[in-house]
Length: 561
Image (tube, rainbow, N blue to C red; front, side, top):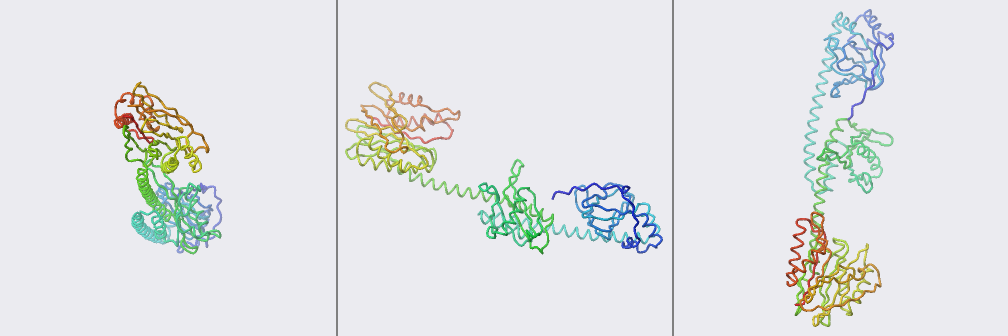
């Protein structure tokens, strides 16, 4: 607890001297043997002092100039350097005699705890008293010796209690650390805090950013009245970062103690997690500073347990998500053709590398009833599970539309009509859809906002870029797509790809780009479709190096052999 700042004392010379009745002095035991004439003379020398609470009587190191008797109120004797209480004195007791007897500076600090009235006897009169009447000195000595013994017994008892508390704290901390499940760990923390502080009950609160405040994690939420008053105490400890004691009032009819749960970061800063509160009945023992320290120590251990439980829970959730993504990847992989179709007179090769566990890219080959084959390459906006699910929906929708036959523009238009109705969150898909007649090399296609394929003409040794074409699918209904036609001649090569190829990025934030892609095709124009796919993969990997893949990579190569 933060030490109280005492008020400044008032010098004795500024205090008015009042006549003190001898019967007032007789209340102090050491005056029992003094005769009446001596008592009258002493009464004339005594100064009556009135002090407000938390006021210094004298400081450690001050000269011993007065002997003090407590007529009313409470005085605490403290070690000034450590703010440790050495003694607590009440009416009828006295202090300040040691410094007068051995002519040494004050060895401790005296401060009023309550409003107090003191009777101050100057040093000269005090020494004359004990010299003239040795019995007074004997009473003072035996009484002081008894006080010291009582103080030593109390100190030893406090040390033993503290040792038991620390031992209990140690085993309590061990107990809560064995709980890996977060819910069980939180309940164990609450239960052990109640046990440690010998309390009737308690609650644990953690900060929730969604409500910007503390939220009860244990049974407090089921008792509305207890929850509200307990939360006020916990809120105060959380906001100040220091323990808070609440004494019984009409509004809060119980003793309460709350301590902040704070995690110390490696850089020395503290991160508040919540608060821990315990309570005792109104007629129970009040909480004190030692209880504050004990609960604060336990709360610091609880912070580590909570952090570990959160990390374990996160790890479990990540593992579950990882398993789900692995399952989704296996399912998605089954939707991607394992091998391209075998067409007499043609070479077909593919490449499919998802950037994450699942992909929004896909390619497909759809056999049509008249012997033609549809080629598809598509890229769904976004990444992750949403994109993968939309990709699966796109594949199923396009296959259903293709079975009905017709030219590429009509097939894509029907698929777009369905996807536009099913699209959620603004998702869309770019697609290149073409139909090949293997008998004559005729190739009709639609480009719905996809990357323009590259066509290598073997007879002229030129590289053409096919038109980008129309709008992506799932954006608007009733869009009219335009068909395009070409013929694949002998040794011609058609390369379909997604933007994960040309936008592949290296550590210097440079992209692979279209120029590298086109040069690769020119340099390998006479290679087979499989060789071109392999060499393209090598070029892209060499370019990106160890830099993480940022987007899905999908490539389809079609060569008329």
